[in-house]
Amino acid sequence: MPTLILDNGSFSIKGGYATDDGPRLIPNFVTRTKRTKRVYVGDLIDTSTDLSGLYYRSPFERGFLTKWDCQLAVWDRVFSNDVLRCAPASTDLIVSEPMFNFGQIQRSMDEIVFEEYKFASLVRAPATRLAVIGAGQTIYGDSGGEPECVLVVDVGHSFAYVVPYYQGKQISKGVRRVDVGGRMLTSYLKETVSFRYWDMMDETYIMNAVKEKCCFVSSDFYRDLDAARGCIGGHGDKNALGLDYVLPDFTNSKCGYIKGQGGAAEQQMADAEAQVLPLCNERFAIPEALFHPADVGLEQGGIHQAVVQAAMACDESLRGVLMANILLVGGTASLPGLKRRLQSEVQAMSPYRVCVSVPEDPATGAWQGGRLLAQGQEVPKEATYSPATVAEWRLTRAQYQEMGPDRAAAHFMKLI
Image (tube, rainbow, N blue to C red; front, side, top):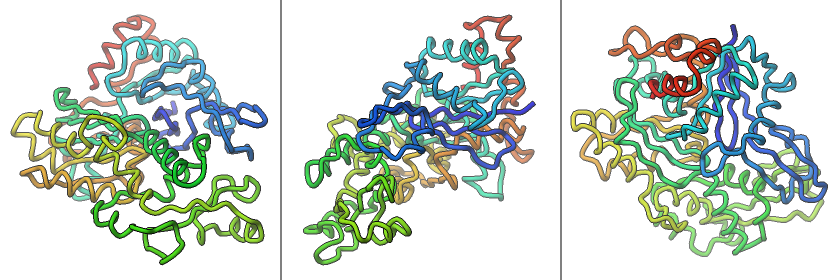
């Protein structure tokens, strides 16, 4: 029986079968265009050329799944023959959920999976728990087994979570959350460039592309800030930090490109008078909010402080190992320079040796963990402990109907 792994994030769904090499990314929202008023579900937005001033409706609110009508519309699209070709009645499902998910949301998800879609079985676990599976390959490479202690830093769309694990079990007293994620950074970038250059407050789609293509985490913020003084994009003295982002015309280009790197689209737009968005210190000042949330009005510490607090909240015997086994995952973790900056900041605050490891694609870290779980590869023989197998994690539809929603929720709580 095939196993479908669904990392159900608040920005995108990473979905695919255990036999696939990688997941397919589907936007987890319903979009309506401003001019034509057409509605697009999930990845159908890629078929539209009218991407200016989009209205988004997300199933998630403050990181939790609350709008089930919206989520069901996206799932219907994901399971359709046009995307994943899923036959739920003959498919096992592994799905991720947010940290500290509310009981009512958990029961609603179980009910929809088993009674609405009628999946054969279900495994429901936090994304950070799935990311721990196979973490040894990222941390140790091919030289060792699975680590007993892992400190997962999940920098996602809504929040950044820091979660310590010991022998596959969450150490709840060490969990920390920073209320800065990819959505906050995109909004911060929109406000900044709207104040300085063009009004981009309604252009979430474009500005998210700008963030992903242009922003990076500075290893020395004040040095780069001084170097960027007087820089306006790629003009003037051609500062190394400055660049020009050509805004899309929605004919030759759908989300724009960095000037000089546009390829065929740039050649086609060469004769037209394109709108250019100059960027310089915005490129590294926006991601700085991950380390200084006060920049966006939040009275809390950055992710480096959350990492130290999480480790120090655990038993003293585990702190050094946790610091040496920090696993950085999540879509926002793909920002260039984040690994190096996080390691240097944490090392400056910690008496222990600090090592931060990042998977090849941090956005799909949880999905890859679910894939290893489905393939029965959670822990190799060299591992020093033997956590639960997928058979113990899985809850079949018959078991759900027998035990009811409350006992089903208690079953999945044992996995955390």
